[in-house]
Structure formats: structure tokens, C-alpha cells
Length: 133
Image 1 (tube, rainbow, N blue to C red):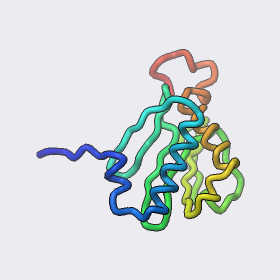
Image 2 (image 1 turned 90 degrees about the vertical axis):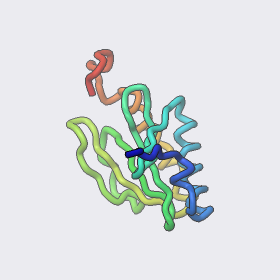
Image 3 (image 1 turned 90 degrees about the horizontal axis):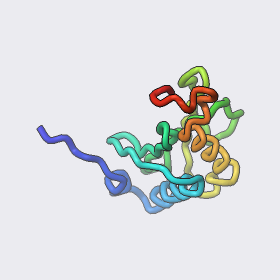
């Protein structure tokens, strides 16, 4: 049985232009942080740093859904739909974006924090020990 290999284009196919624009702006914010890799699955386009995945997004009919991992709980914000502890040091924040204006400087700052997590910032003294997360 062949397993489909998912691509970014698969996630964009058939979505409104406005949702695709939100996805592309999200990726632009990630690109501004530095190098990263993609891990595309059926449910999400995840972006990964040198140590781990740190954020992901998926366009849909209503805009953009996604998540990012940071080392703190972000206070109340309409874009954040849920916050859950992921590890002792990380909190996963799920978001919903429906307008380009929501991908503002504050959101970009959250993505920079998440990018740092992808690079291993959450590991502290353990950062130089391969295999530990």
C-alpha cells in the first residue's frame, strides 16, 4: 500500500487566496528568524530548527490554524485558542489567524521565541548533549 507524501502545495490546494496569503506571511516570519527545515504531514506543515520542530501551520477555508512552542505562557490574546504544557520547559500555543494584520510584530516576536526553542534554547545546560530534548 503506497503512502502519500504530503507537500506544502497539497495544503494550499483548493484553499482561498486569503488563506494562502496568511500561510505565506507566516512562513515569511519564520524565514526572518534564520534557517529551518520543513516536515510536512497530512495534518500540518511543521517548521523545524536544528534541534526540534517549533511551529506549524495549515491554511483552511477560514484562514490559518497552527501552533508554536515557547518557554512561557502567553497572556490572553484572541489569536491564541489554547495553551498546554508540552514538557516541563515548553508550552504549546495553538492559534487561529483570519487577517494579515494579525501577523503583526507581536506575533513575529512569538515566532522568534519559538524559533529559539527549535534551536535548543529550552535545553539550557543540556543544549550541547545530543539527543536530549
